[in-house]
Length: 69
Image 1 (spheres, helix red, strand yellow):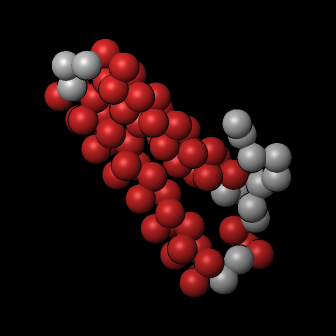
Image 2 (cartoon, rainbow, N blue to C red):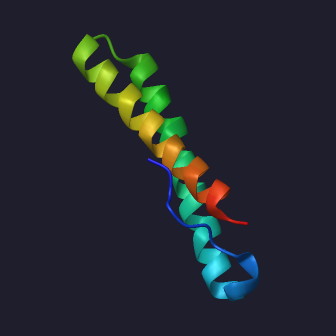
């Protein structure tokens, strides 16, 4: 789900921008770890759960990045 509004970088302060960077980085890290976990799983349901969660975390990071204009 894409964000409805963009964030004008000129309208946020350095602390808010740093917080956004940390949130984006955390989601990218989660996506990487969850993808790794999915590749280690033998159980198809758990594998799918990790894979879907990885994709959702990456989508969130991407949506946040794309909302910064």
